[in-house]
Image 1 (cartoon, rainbow, N blue to C red):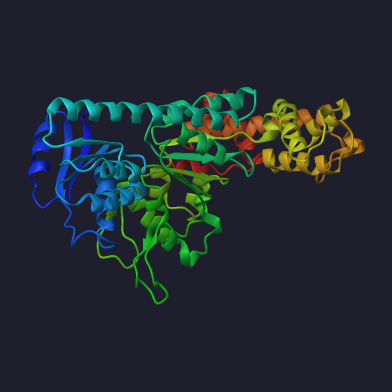
Image 2 (cartoon, one colour):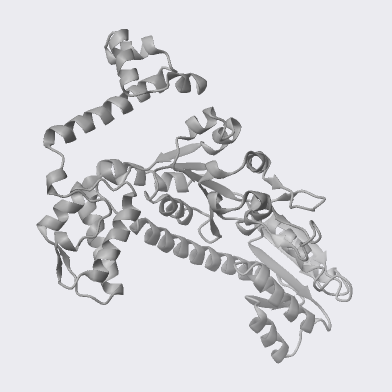
Length: 468
């Protein structure tokens, strides 16, 4: 097991206290420092960015602040800054005496504990391990509670839905990049949040970004940030989304909307974990997990040049394909009742469920907008419903079919067979890398009949050869 990391900061005129502390800790911790902060020169607005960079790069679990002499006031001020820069990291102040009121001032400023000189090894280690244990327990409890809350938002009992949800804990336990593929409204961000809050990064930021909503000329600035003076109107420094997500997860929805030049820079970050803000002369590092999502077939997007192939391979380490609502129709009543309970409470109405005809109407609709469309339809209907049981006529569904337009069993069966044929053939072509003869043999059909099925479903065989 790797030793825990501790950082030493010293604001005293002598480094003697920090050196003694380091000797006590170095057998049990990986140490950064001691780093001396000059009260008259280094501390202030100019030092905070450097301190933040040190904390980001080293990622300490504990910070020791050594203050000997008349610097207790400065220590309180520095503690306030540390509370802003690293609120989740306990700080232990090591001081040389001081009045009780000054000690109280340190605790109020954000110190988790304090020790007085001369330092005793048993006292130092006991206090350090106690704080680490408390911190780990708190983080673990928060992460478990948050993961459970986000997993509960994924509602359904259908086999193809549960098959994907069952993968979330395994994916959360990994640090690999994730690619979520699913139609609009299937809940890609919910899956991304469940992965983040079920992982060791749960206590760090989850930053969702819709790549399609960022103007092309601002993409690089939004992702990587800029330095002051990087361009004419850059009057101050701006932190990019990657730096904002440091330690956590950056969710890039509609990744296919990123312009090619931004894909190149994102690829470099994925490879090296390094990036350069606009106007900066040096590279920066960030510890960020990327979860990307798209409602397109990204292999096809690679083929037509919309997405770089190398970026696709970098993102597609682990892939989850989210089923559309029409392929998990048995979940429609469960989801509908969930939304009725939620929005009836918001609207302060006593609506408790659906009539059989209303449920039948919900089951017949094809839901091209998936769960999001269902949610909005229920919310809209709740507002205008004035009875406790929602009837079919109360449901306001866009382009909903009336009874004269409902599919017959034969029509519905033909559609399901066609969908199965297309998926089955595409799966075989993918396994056989576009080799029609080999795929036909696996399907136990003659090559001509197999080719006719390919033409019937307008499947591009070359796409599977390109990805071989």
